[in-house]
Image (spheres, rainbow, N blue to C red):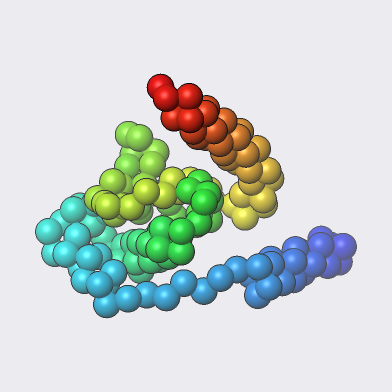
Length: 149
């Protein structure tokens, strides 16, 4: 029993260290609050079930806007939450489109940080392949322009 407690405490310390040293605090703007409020007032997802999902929705919206505003090359991100059902479309298993309106970020939700850290390298590999493909396409396009095509 003592070993399990020590292991759990070590895991908590690792997560806290990760959050303190590797995470970025994203600002929340008045515009984001108004955007989320409009969704809630109009009972649009994720507020269609009349549940108070305001905080989760605001976190997701501010995160995605921060990513887009700061011109990150990568657009695929993981979001860890214990209650993804509150902001996910049950049929598509993706974050409600209304919540991400006007944003070009792909957010995958998982319920376990350990799982997120495990699948993150796969996402990086996929993004590397996409980036390589995009660069190849760009250079071929530039080559065609130089040749007069």
